[in-house]
Amino acid sequence: MSELINTLSLYLKYPFVRYALIVGVLVALCSSLFGVTLVLKRFSFIGDGLSHVAFGAMAIAAIFNLTNDMPLVLAITVISAILLLRTGQNTKIKGDAAIAMISVGALAIGYLLMNIFSTSSNLSGDVCTTLFGSTSILTLTKTEVWLCIILSIIVVAIFIIFYNKIFSVTFDENFAKATGTRANLYNLLIAVVIAVIIVLAMNLVGSLLISALVIFPALSAMRIFKSFKSVTVCSAIVSVFCSLLGILISILASTPVGSTIVAVDIVVFLIFAFIGTIAGRMS
Image (cartoon, rainbow, N blue to C red; front, side, top):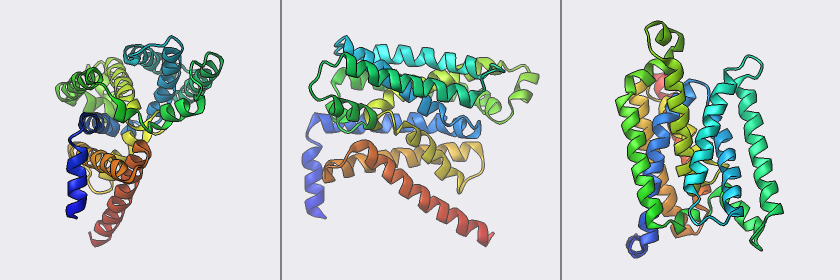
C-alpha cells in the first residue's frame, strides 16, 4: 500500500498528471449535471451524435494543421447542436433520426477527410486516439487547461442560475410552455451547453465514449434516489469519483484513460443497481 502511495505521489509531481486530474474532475462534474436532464428527456444519444460531429471537426482542424483545434471544434459542434435541435422538431425528421443522420454522416466524412488529406504516417493511431482518448488527456497544455476551467465555470453557473427553468423543461415541457416559460429557448441553451461539454470531454474519453460519461452517473444515481436534486447531486459525486479513480488506475496500470473511466462507471452502476434492488425489496 505504501509503495502504491509513493508511486502516486511521484506521478503527481508531473504537471501533465495534475492537468489531467483537474480537467477530468471538471468534465465529469459538467457532464453529470446535464446528463440527468438528457436521460429524463430521453435525449441521451445527443451526446453520441455531437461527439461524432466533434470528431469530424477535429479531422478538419488536422487537415489545416491547427495547433489549437478547440475553438474550431467548439464552434462547429455548437452550430450542429442548434441544427440538431431544429431538425429534431421537424415533423418529417424525428429527433432520433436526426441524431443518427448527423452522427453517422459526421463520423464518415471525418474519417474520409483524414484519409484523403492525411498529414501523419500513423493515421490509425491518430484516429484511435481521437475516438477513444487514449493519450490526449495526458498531453494537455496549460492554455487548454485554463480554457477548460473557464468553460466549466460557465457551464456550472448556467446550471445553477437556470436550475428552476431546466427542471420545469425537463419534467413537463408542455406545462412549462403553458406557464410562460420559453421552453424552446431553454432547450436550445441545454443543447449548446451539451455541445460545450462534448468538446471538453473529447480529450478525456474520446468521441465514442462520451455518452457513457454523460449517462452512467445519472443512471447510477437513479437506482437509489428519486428526486431531481438528489439524483443530480449524487450523479455529480459519482461522476467525479469515477473520473478520478479511472485516471489514477490508468496511470498506474498503463491502460487507456477513457476506457478505464467508463469501466469504473460500469462497476459503480452495477453496485448502485444492486443496492437499489435490495433497498426496493426491503421497503
